[in-house]
Length: 551
Picture (cartoon, rainbow, N blue to C red):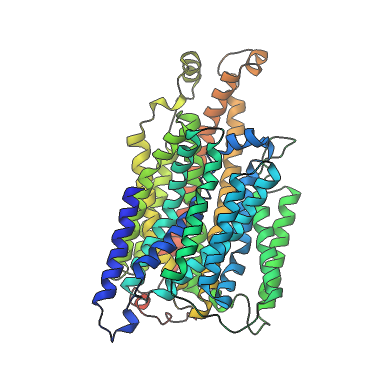
């Protein structure tokens, strides 16, 4: 955290210094008076929103035991994702209409209140409701935060640096969440999980208090909210995200994920797609639409959106499967697991900083293309993690009580590739974000940011659901193959938790590494799209005007 904060402060100092040396007549390239403070505040809010996606993950078993909700634990994650992903478009447009600073502050306050409710929750309903309310607060704060950077910092080096810090926070937040979650849970297993929620309360309230003092005010724009568009867009996104999330949710009667072919999955995905098609048709007929379709019309921006759907999916899969791998297969404690991801913060800050400087001299295709190749390589190397799951290896582990992953060296087999993954993400996120929001009119920057955030959420949910389904089927098949490996009679095996856990962990190792392989090809597909379709020049991103064809 300390190194990360120093990195932020260094970037902010650069921005502040740049603001001081620009001549008065160069207003278009000048940062606001409170550039450093504004950027730090926006990034603190972004860090809070992103880390909340992972901070509670390590504490889930303790939450289930304390509130007696083992069978519904997955809804702690899914409920937040539903509200967050479903309301992002609405949150972005509310900022455009009623003022981004105002909506940003409201989102922070809602998030803080919801976190307090989650921290003192006494039952399942109270906790799940608080998670939905957190998602609402995040959906208001996240797109307005990104839009505030776009409207506060002029195009060119200042905006590039601002986006590098913002992108670093977006990636670092997930790793910081794992570290904080492990540490807070370790303080007190019975009360520590509550701290994973309560820690957001002072951060959110202080950020909301400082917002009027550090952020420039953005005027409200004339026009009424497109109610029909808001309903169709929100319900469509909620239905789509729910249907995608339902794929990997566990069926209580079978203990297996519902999968892509489940009728409920198909119904909600179909309903979501239908509502979103109706939303697009309705937006064509409204004078002041919730989402101007010109935002989606340009190929350059479309390439950025598609790539921003695929790359976070690969990153989230790395966090999800690797955190389980190092705990279940290598025997790491929750805190040790969180600390294992610290190299990600270093790589993310380094990659984002490098890309913000390169973008002034190099076309985005080369930066993002390189970043996605590196990220895919990291996932491929995680695919090569191997354990001794032979009969002799399982018998030896069973007899000695050793972990299956004892032979895996963290410093040579895992840490370097976490660093490479983060470097690739850092190189990719800054140019993609610049492309996605560049050229959008200031009065539409909130909804433009909302679309970008929505692409990330939907892509992350779809990618994780797909990879979870693949991993489960491989794990199930492998577990069946390993049942006889220990040479125990069926009745003894069924009554031996140690043997069953060993088989499950060995099978999961195969499932996780298969998911890493598919994730690698997912991100290499995004790389292929970048190399073949992205044609925007770095000089075009240095101006406020949209690149050719972007409106």
